Structures are given as C-alpha cells and as structure tokens.
Image (cartoon, rainbow, N blue to C red; front, side):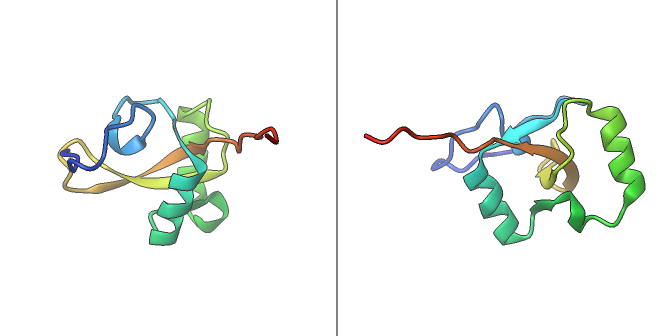
Amino acid sequence: MSIPATETASPTDPATTAAPGVVDSIERAEFIRREHLGTAGPISALPDEAAIARWRANYPRWRGRHWTYTADNDGVALRLRPVNVARATRRRPA
C-alpha cells in the first residue's frame, strides 16, 4: 500500500499494519474522520453478530466497541476489522 507524500505511516494505523490477531488503535480524531466518511463506526451499526463473535474470540484485546475498513496488503480491497479508539486524554489547564 502506498502512502501519499503528505502522510506518514503510523505503526498504530490499521491501514498500515497487517499482523493477524492484533487489534490496532487509532486516535479519536482519526476515528471521527473515518466515521464521517463511512469507513468506521460503532459496533452497534453492524448487523452481523457472527462476525462480532469471531472478532471477540480472535482479538482478545479488542474492547468491542468500534470497527473500521482497512486496505489489504495490495491496497486493492477494503477489509472490515475491529479497531480500538484511543481514549480521550485529559489536558491540564495552563
């Protein structure tokens, strides 16, 4: 998968990793962007209970809340995968 020159490959971005059984995490802003584009969402939006059950069995570190589409190794097809969304960080007032 090629990455445009304006983007940097992230080791936690599911689109740039392909290790089986590993649940990737994306930042909340990235999840919101993908959700807006229709390529991510909450687990409640998926009607396939069998796929969700497989994910729970195959990805024990998955929090069970979100999914996203990611490009396969060839960058040709999109695959539906579970994803963890990074929790919001608390910022201390300056």
